[in-house]
Length: 307
Ligand code: KIV
Picture (spheres, rainbow, N blue to C red):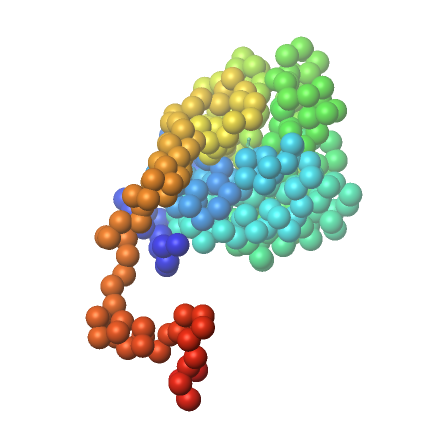
């Protein structure tokens, strides 16, 4: 393979790292905040070069890169491997990682210990957790322990079964109130930002009037302070179910398949590798080498000539 992966020279070379105050300032100025997920070194480099503000090591990586059916099975150890790779590819965007299902709900102590692993072992700037209810107390505990927390309300994939599947939330007055309460509770708990996922735009508009921290939307309309999309959805790499909000901005998987298919065809046709893909050896060295090779079967070596 190619060696020495480098963070490429980028138009972001003179950008300062994005901080919490910088995100709050953007919100104040009404400048949209751009967030994207990443799960490995190359996707992090893409996010860096593209100049996004925030990168999320989402537990969506359970499906997009680890091949699970949902976000539920992914472990803390698996998420930390992904987060460490992303950290190595980033210089400027603010880095958030999802605490996976089952790694923070049981107690404040469990939540703090898991969040600390992400900070110490993967170097993330903040963690994200899902839902209101007990997660509000866990968010408060993690914030009190000195780690910034992003909340996530509306469609919360870790508990999609309890929500009736992967479907928009807040579509009745009562459910809209539930989402509103979760968002405000998380804000009160000290979350620096909240993600709104798959809620009606009109409900998001109403909640936004009460929000004081940057809100990042995904399927929540245009009134939020920023947007997040899943890397594999927006680039057309993932073949699984794509929700209506997952606008595709490129068809990278088609390109990847075309590239691998062309390679396979050339190997089979004997046209790859060509002369320019091979290394040479000095003819004298080659001659010397050939002279010391094991002779073909049936021909004995002379004394002292064995290899
Ligand atoms: O895991 C994820 O990718 C997410 C985003 C959809 C916000 O939580």
